[in-house]
Length: 452
Image 1 (cartoon, rainbow, N blue to C red):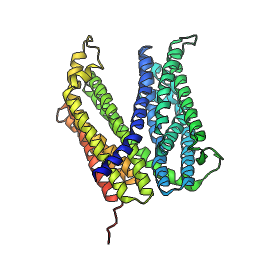
Image 2: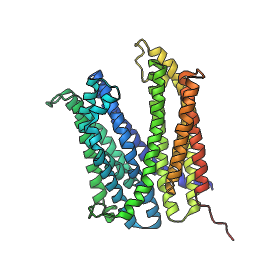
Image 3: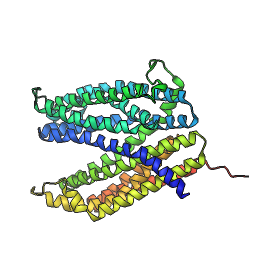
Image 4: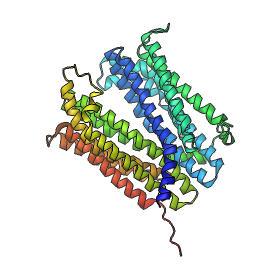
């Protein structure tokens, strides 16, 4: 048993570590825009922060089709059906492309709905300037997500990491030139940031696409050969699995957006502390997200091959690894909160000491928060491995919005716990989600046949 754990753990880390790195690099890609615009202007930073959030909300739903490719290809590989690998990947790309094209009018008219949401004319105009260009990047962004799923399912996660790291460097260079007008480029402000983002997305897609088509081990799949041919059976398979994944992501992002909104009601200092603590928690979450993706692939392959014992062993190994890393994170959060929060602060600023004190308390709660967040994303990954997404969508939505948000509000305001109460509510919602989703997996997963 211990030998099997070591074998599965090694396979999971070989696949999972590059995925963790690529998720962290993706975060750095977004942080680089914030860093550059923060040095350019307050209105520009506010507008692009708001516009970026709107882009992400639209993106997260559409990414469900791209994420559905991961378990479908893993299962097909387990069955040895290489034709289905190509069919599912292509239709995932088709659906991602169609979604990106259909949603672009939202970005073209973004100035109208930004003003309707109460934004100033200046911020609304800057946001529209950004989204009219960056919104065209929805297509390559979703295609990149689909190719990442395709390559990860085929065990080629390292190329995803290296291309994403290259994208970070390209974005920094282009953004520096086009936002500020350096190196002979025109000074374009938010338009420069949008052009940089759009260029990086297309460059990333082309890099991954060329690799997926021509890499020697992958050439036999002929991913883009006769790409124009529709396959409605495979499209239906991807659509049915993908839209609940998109809704689940939308509900989860809404949970954290709602918490941020409530923290703003508490005050500016708590909101700033919340933002720092949430960034730290997000960095830790990327570790568990990468392991969850690896678990989807490995458990999906075992399930597709009919090796139920291995599938259940892989699931147990993934949960054990994630729990062990949670324990490490909890120790770090509880023993080094001041040092961690200080990394995000200029202590010479007037509110820094108060933000540090508030953030230290929130980081202690992040230890509990991390456990629920890690286990729920792992449970979702394992459920996707057995192609179960619709019931988990409802379970997650109820946990986030039926439990998490009401508890955050009740603890934060009527019970007077403020920011700590809001975070306690998040912890309760995530722990409820992790418990219900884990129970769902172990009940739904195929059982090892009893030997006669």
